[in-house]
Amino acid sequence: MRVTEVALCFATVLGCCCTLQVFYYLILSETAVFPLWGHRKTGIILFWAPPKGSAWPPEGLKFGEKCTVTYNRNQLRRADVVVFHYTSFLPKDLPWKHSRRSDQLFVWWSSDNPGDVKQNLGLTNSDLREFDNGFFNWTMTYMNDADVVRSYGSRWELINQLEKGKSVVDQIILDKTKIAMWKTNKCNGSQNARMRTGFAKELMNSGLKLDIFGRCLGSKMTDHPTSKQMKTYKFYLSFEDAVHCRDYITEKFWDNALRNDMVPVVWGPTKEDVLAVAPIHSFIHTDDFESPAKLTEYLQFLDQNDDEYRKYFRWREDESMTDDKMIQMIQKEHPDIRVQGRTLGLCEKEFQNTGYKTVHSIVDDFFIRNRLECTEYMP
Image (tube, rainbow, N blue to C red):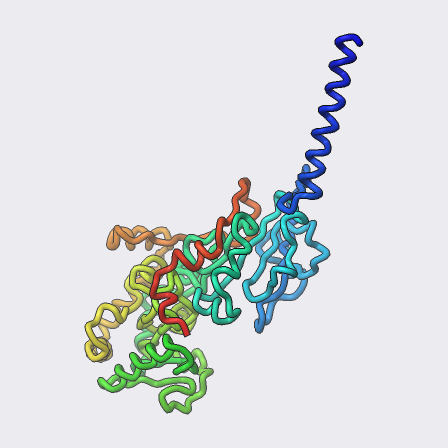
């Protein structure tokens, strides 16, 4: 046999072996992913299922400038992004790695804190270990270091959406006729709820005139006050249902308080977490006071001194204020704080994405790396 024939035979055998090896990897291996060569982004974001107990946008809704929402699992192969809310998936119901494109992003989504996630699903850490080592590519949570930050509000939005100027703040001050309010129905459902209710009760016992909207501490007022009603109060108790959960600052702070022209009195998040995201000098933190009585004394002082109270709205007096300008102000005053700027939405980030990454472990990323107090006071 000539040398060329031997070489040709060897090449043929080698090619067959390589083909079989690739076939095994793609078809038989449970960890294989199917590449889709030359795939162009479709802008389709498939939500595997809506969050349980929540209303959700209709099929086909535009999501960002270039993306479209779908719940149709038949679109799985075409979707650029597949989002799994923690309440809406079971391991046996998921498209495991052998049925996904290599360029497709699987996103783990939670808007709840770690304690609530475990309570809502009855989960243990071992239940989520099943998704370790690469099932998910991104996380989408309220945490500032999530791949996609989906927070309850942002300083950037407030600065760009709320009216600003001296006359605006003049009217805010003029509209105030009452001192403090709190909207809640969760008084004793968990240890955290009992702790924050106890703090509110101590404020009242020390002389704070607090109106409670909801069925707590004997209140019979509606839990749905109007925005006009809320804007007559100077302070809002922005008391979370979690203790020191990293970056967990909800609508109680952003919508109930700041968007209704009230100064939030914050309990739950650390002061450092709030400083990283809030407008400068816009809130009061309970940790700055040695007791509820001292806090009550300070709130009553502000109630009697409009000039001092007005200082909490200076960030709204400057009509030229931008988020970049405010970030510089916060960094100058708090150089140790990592100030959060504007973040990209899911659609924006997907179209800018050029790399590939995986989340090593949801348990490590979302639960274990959190502060001990976040899960120490679980229900």
